Length: 117
Length: 114
Image 1 (cartoon, one colour):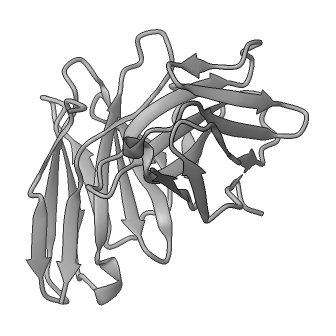
Image 2 (image 1 turned 180 degrees about the horizontal axis):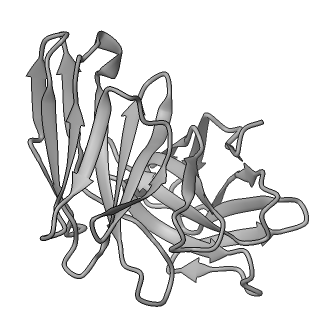
């Protein structure tokens, strides 16, 4: 089974609208971390947001928020007020196990987001 | 700019050859991770080093090896190169001091094997 599943290969959103990028994960470890990264066409990987498995609150970073539904094993990224510069590939990732103990990291296949003016 | 540097940016070589990719982590980061990003395999975790010691191993081929030096820079060695090794190789680093183990990625080295 895939550890990280991103079911939306491509998404379109109107500028200034909000968009949700889906991510589901699979682990039996009670300790894990979830990450979202952005990869623009230039190729670099940019960290956006982190959610720990024991975090009670959904993570937020500026226009990014993570809709963490533990029972459903989903960690959807919500981008509010989309901007043209948000057009990029978005990757969901998971670290399995307690952090800093020598962990496996898994990335999803990504969602290509296009923001339409 | 993440603070992680990788050299070279581009590398073109032939099948059967050996190459070395270099990574310098962010100042203060002790962990270095290597990833391979290819069109068919996506982003694959290869290996992690922490303060000079191998900490975790992912989908790293036996033809590939890595090490982290006392100054914390790391090198990924790829040998007996095949066409399928053509990919973008990322290095990332993180710090163990509190907080999360968020990885900050370098700009990558694009390897083309002809």
